[in-house]
Image (cartoon, rainbow, N blue to C red):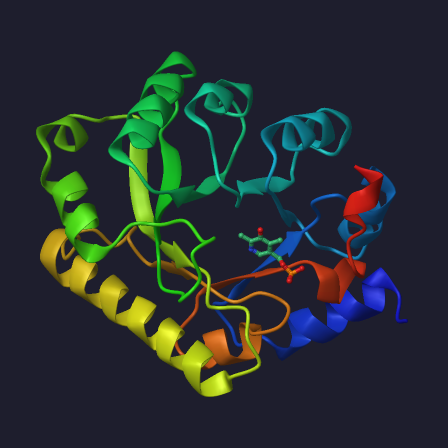
Length: 226
Ligand SMILES: *Cc1c(COP(=O)(O)O)cnc(C)c1O
């Protein structure tokens, strides 16, 4: 197995200009993050709020922390002070909570709307109708402490490249439609978060601006340890 630094260099070096690499460090120890940090990586993704907050406490403060996982409203408060981007917003209720917590910290918290694009029951996300209802709601229009800067999605976990490509293509279409309909005057709406270790190359070809790569950098995760 290659070292974290070698993996990171290889992946970062293969991404086109303008595609951001989110190094997904969930379940991995602080030492592994330090290794990546010392090699220049500054953007890390976690999927549990408690783990995110613990790592934030002890690590350098110029790290950009992304919350990439499924998020419960009662956990938002533990990261509202520092989180750089929340990838998984999939309800108005969650967005309201983020707005409220953002206000307490006098921040505008960047968020992505998560869409359901896979053919797997286990994945979370909005469909287009739900997203439109959210974006057209008075509640959303009154929020001042969140900003939606793009969309996020996960493809089906399959070796079928044609299917994965089709799902990413669909997410790009969703992004384009939302951009044209709701964010045409808003240059900050520009992120398309898609692609993980197994499929980020396809995601980049389909227009991803942000890939979330974990095991290809840090090695396989061992969930038995947590
Ligand atoms: C764990 C996770 C990733 C990274 O997965 P790898 O296959 O290890 O690259 C990306 N996105 C989300 C939402 C995740 O939960």
